[in-house]
Image (cartoon, rainbow, N blue to C red; front, side, top):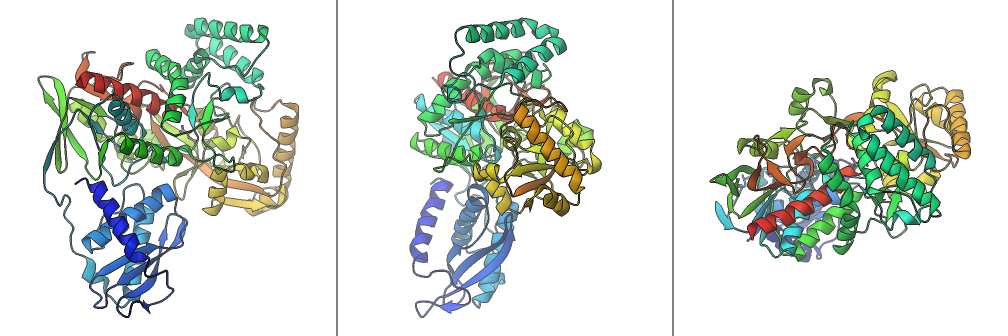
Length: 624
Ligand code: MEZ
């Protein structure tokens, strides 16, 4: 039986038993026999409470109920759900933290331990070792095996299953999502109906792109001329709807990537992006709110909103939907099964070996992500990033790239590693670029702006590192908070400092009050005029004029590894001689070439949906 199914059964059993005893503040005898008590631990979001019910003889944990906590439901919450099942199943606290949710896991286990003591038990009685695969080594036969249950892996699996194939995903960690679940901003797509719901205000941004691109990359002048004509034709035809084109998406991505990108892959990304939004719709993921993001000349990032119309994090929204779509399509996801080897026969990929499993397949899709959590590998490839924090999920360590190399795959751009300019340093939490796209500004410790906040990530990060302390403050106002559940979450997690006036905020931050007040007034005037004489920013959103005002202290952190396994536009893995490896496909951050030297925000989700789908369809066709 699949591990995930066992977990579901255990949770169901647990819920039935828990209904008998609600949360208690101290040891309470329930049913005249068992005892329930509460323990407290510290997770990612601060204090968390857990109720534990022990049997009368204190030797059996009968139920665990997670109480008050500030964990992210999709990450820390999910980890606590998985750990609840493991602890109950094994009657042991000797379980591994869930990768990617270590703080929540450790806080949960500490709270359970404390609750056991408070209920009169001894945590030492619950320490027996739990073996990795209780069912022993298993061999499975399938049509397509996918390595990794992140966005690319699940998309590929759904696409292959929709093409009628039997699909198994092997996921290294205890939960789906990989780096994708941490993705906050949204997905870039060009020429969608959703863009047309916006008012066109981007002439200045577009003209700036066309002139800088032509000057900086003369080799792109033909592409620039084509876009200029598309724009002129659109204006001549009465400027209906919102202007964008796949060519402009290609140009923005190439310019953002310093034209190091593989142009064929970029073209595939852009040309399939609008259809990818429709495909997501078809599996129940609606990304219909369109906003501005760094390096995009027009509003192109598509985002989900909640029932109140507030933008929400794309990864936390999309991952559970893809998981459900996998379930509905009959895809089997096996968790806690790190893949160690690609099985080859006569030069063709014919399956994989994982801890506890051998999966024989007709084709293999690699979707195990990049290596942004492997800080040693990062520093080896780019020594100047030694000491930087990472926004990546713990499982993103580059194993798939190494396995692909072991069977002859070529790699590209391995030293192209992106730092994201806005990372909260105490927790390594990504503070989405969406804040800047929606109107936030950056100020330094002196209370002064220092760059075009919606420039590309490499440019903004470099500007930040040149400021006092190598850090800066993102400033937003209450209007922005009211429009975004993401920002509300940052406030709950304690990342913000706030003030009723600009001066009060400056005082709380220990920066010159006059300087911040003058900066904010100057910025609001620039928004009203639609011109930023100081730094040439061309996207403004709204003035930051509604109290209270909030600041988040940030600095750059490792975010995306642009290099990886070489693929062609059919998502086939290319070997060191330039030929596709039969039966081997790859998609998402494990691959290199799409993003060049710098990925644009919103292009990772576009990458995993577009290339995940191509890889899944290709693997299904190969599996015949
Ligand atoms: O694509 C990304 O990395 C992204 C959208 C990040 C963010 O700032 O939200």
